[in-house]
Length: 154
Ligand SMILES: [Zn+2]
Image 1 (cartoon, protein in one colour):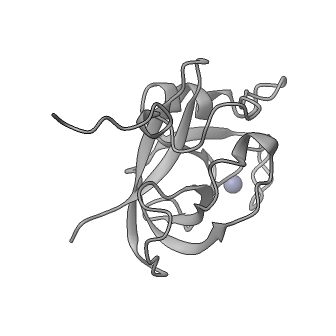
Image 2 (spheres, rainbow, N blue to C red):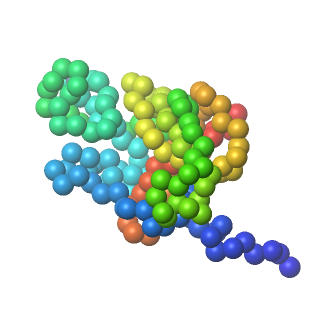
C-alpha cells in the first residue's frame, strides 16, 4: 500500500491559494501578457520602431519614445539573475508555504528583460546564479496562469 500525501502537498500550485489573483490593468496595457500566459506562451513587449524589449508593459517605448509597441513570443528560457529564499510570509496565505524560492530571471532572447517568479521544486535546494531555467505555466482554478520557473537539466 502506498503512502498518500496530504492534500496540501498535492496542490498543483507552488504557493497555496489565498493570494490576490493577478489581473490585467484596467487600461489594458498588459492584457496580452496575461492572455498569452493562459495560452502557455511567454510574450514580451517589443517596440515596433526600434526593436527594444521592455518589461513590465508600458504604453511608450523607453528607448525611442514611440507609442508603436507590439508583443513578441519568446522561448521561455532564461538564467537566474538573482534569487531569495523567503522565510517570512509576505501575506497571511503564505504562512504554510515558507520557505519558498523567488527568482529574478533574465530572459535569454528578449534583450536582458528580467521577470520575477518562483523556482519550483525543493525550496531548500541550492540555487546558482546564472543557472539555466525555463518557464512553467501554472494554471490556477480561478482562471489565471502564473509563470513559474524550473531548472533546466544539463
Ligand atoms: Zn523604441
